[in-house]
Picture 1: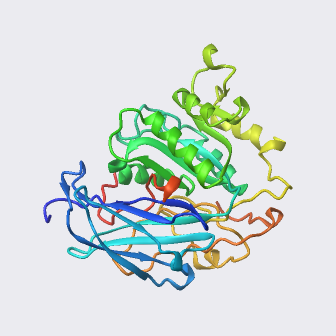
Picture 2: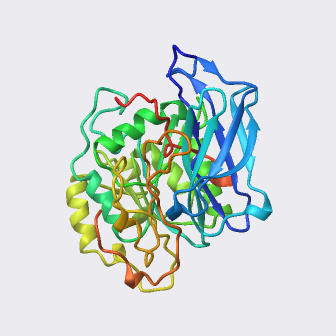
Length: 351
């Protein structure tokens, strides 16, 4: 183990108060998961009161033959609506992985972004730092500022989590939920569809709109989104012109239209928004920012974990509040997809 880098990951989880709150982690070594940690003890921690910075030990689990740990929070310890840091620590070598459990209210509104082929100007973000499409970061931040939960989704295997998160961090993408496929899959589009459908059906989220490349049109259409809710990056195609809105003039022009569009403005209805932390991947929020208890945090933070048992920056629990009071400051079940929020503290940081 001394000669290979830990590539552990814990799934970010979206759950509801009355549903199962199940945490899943996988413990592997090497960039291509060359070594599986089997039959080893892993401590599971949660920060039930993030402002305190104190980790609460939930239980100790044993990794199975595929290096996985699955732990369902017992009914007596179920968490209320809010955002909670999760940490899993290998007892043997003290390597760890972190993630977030987000307990949502029913009717949570979100905006989905498919990472593959829509953010980067090149084909793969696994290359040597491909350029970001102009305006992409600003469009994501626009929706974040309006109070929507940001969901990033990709068909990539979870073993690439650290590199993808690092790339998002380098380019200051707003914090959000990131879901990966669990290992290599033959049909990543089908996996995306199943995951998002489960979120809608079991966590009762509402997808306001979704972004991606042409291959994502079928995914979003199967979820019941209307053509005016689907934004596709790339050259317009007659075949799909009635199934989506093509961003043929780029993100910058699209952002201008959103800023003057009534549909993109915060609704005055009683629609539910979650309040997570504003900001970008890899950037710690200042203490005074974190103490703004009057706002629901909108996006979960993805940050490099500290050594075991050391508090991370503290996202607040969510609180209900009218969206008219929204902050204008800086910028288990269905949720058990592979999120890239909690990455190992020994990871490759070059996309």
